[in-house]
Length: 330
Image 1 (cartoon, helix red, strand yellow):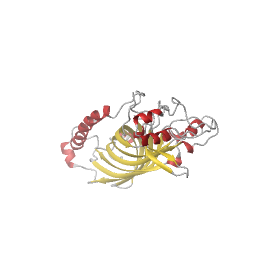
Image 2 (cartoon, helix red, strand yellow; image 1 turned 45 degrees about the vertical axis):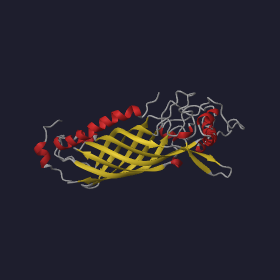
Image 3 (tube, helix red, strand yellow; image 1 turned 120 degrees about the horizontal axis):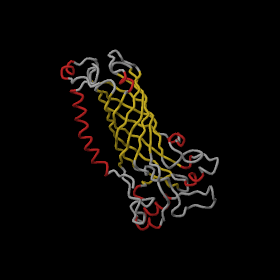
Image 4 (cartoon, one colour; image 1 turned 90 degrees about the vertical axis):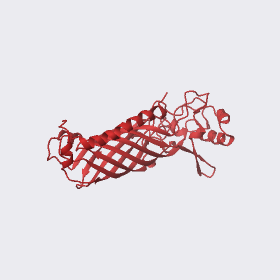
């Protein structure tokens, strides 16, 4: 069974409760190998977000990462961050941001049979995405030169990783005879039998989940107070239902059992929107037919442009830190 949010929340809260006082204590009392003072940085980031799930894709068999990115569905992410730097090679970041993800099977270009199943499936989704995370940044080149007081590069490559929370709420569309789309929230429709006793291995999924953000970037020092940079931010998730597609088609009879009459009508239409491409005339799949790939969770990533402003004194020396610092650790 895939991990659920409830199994992670308590450990995350406990870790967060200990982490923030620890960061503050280190910032106030520890010296990390050079005379650069502690500084804090606040800033903004924005850039395109790409969804990696079951819907959409490109020619050939479904794949992971860049091959199946649909650029025409790309939306911009916007966010803000705050980072504490106790020295030149280590940072503790918290960030919050908003983006939008979507996927559509009808955008797939076809030149063979491998991608026809996905296009014939004809499903779509869209979802707002809110997220917040905490991460540790490591500047390896700066770490290697930490003993050299004069080392002050303009370009600073870094890697980072952490833990976060994100919230999503997928919607799917139904097209009327005039070609107009009406969007409906998919979570309450139980499109793959989530929470139905007839499908015991498909529990209702939570709309707020844990993710693991990680990536790499390059920070550019513009002045003593202003920096810019580019960053690849990847988020691994523990759910396969950001797009509400994961396993197989269910018997639509159960929509009448578990949903209101109005919702059952919508669920029947929206859970299976097959168009006959491989077999003309077929408009519905039999229960148990593959609908998604349950072996790979949904992920998403962003390519960001960042702008940061240093808060407080921008000088190098810090007499207060020198008076209370501990001996060199490195």
